Length: 126
Image (cartoon, rainbow, N blue to C red):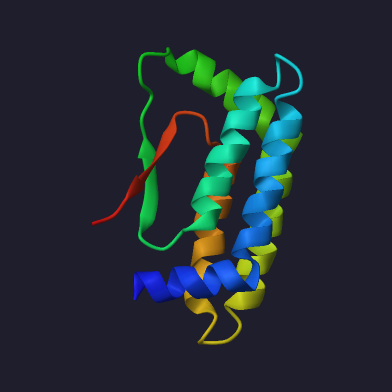
């Protein structure tokens, strides 16, 4: 069922959305300051490419917590708020019908990830 959901997602908007995230990430990587933000855009794009059966969880790694907080605050004002609002609008529109609820839920998941992606890792659910 996850494969079918991902295939429908990919055909009806997932691929162009992921390509947009990848291009946005590459554009952010033009400057040295934008490299961490570009990596987060690519991370969101990979989640947007194949969202069913994947989730994210907090994984801070070796970096201190204050660095993630600072980067998430900057991210929120530069891109996170706007990306999350777009995903929330599409999630609400898709959830109007019963058939669209699974895809709407994926948009809500992407909106939550877009608010603060630093310190999170994308995992595959088995």
